[in-house]
Amino acid sequence: MNDRIKIKPHPQIAERLFWDINTENLDFQKDRLYVIDRIMNYGGWNDFLEVLRYYGEEVIRTEIVRSSYLKKDVLNFICFYFDLKPTDFKCYTRRQSHPELWDF
Image (cartoon, rainbow, N blue to C red):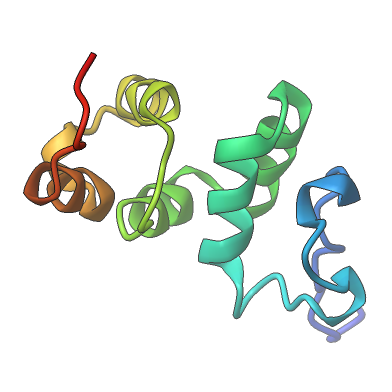
């Protein structure tokens, strides 16, 4: 019997989503809010499924509400998928306290 702890390989997501950093230095556990936030805002469906597989619904639900920015359509999708309300999100309450200058 092998007593070694199994470490999940990092999620197989598009590296183009992390254009501003060296992905070799990315710690998928410590930086999970950053990874989840980036996938939600800029990733495709396969990236979303891969992050969902890697972290699980509960971790994503717990982390994503702390995000400082989510696109409006992404916020709506996440609310629907994870059964959350917009008011649960830091970015939503922050957006409400700083209305846009030009509302067209």
